[in-house]
Length: 88
Image (cartoon, rainbow, N blue to C red):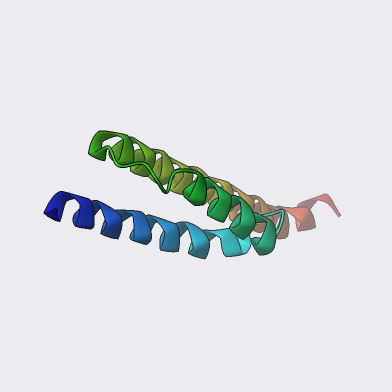
């Protein structure tokens, strides 16, 4: 089934991307990895392509959320670095 194998590839890519993003997670990479693994294992028996697509979409949403979180954190750190001098 070509549909299933292309979805499988998407799922694996999603997992890899999330794993990569998890390295900077505030609670630690190990915490993130174990939660990620549990989430993927929980859905490993899902066979319905529509359901799989929904799960992939949820994963992509999580990626966007993580990127936003990291971006904000970097932005705040930079802002602090550049503006803390004014107050002294």
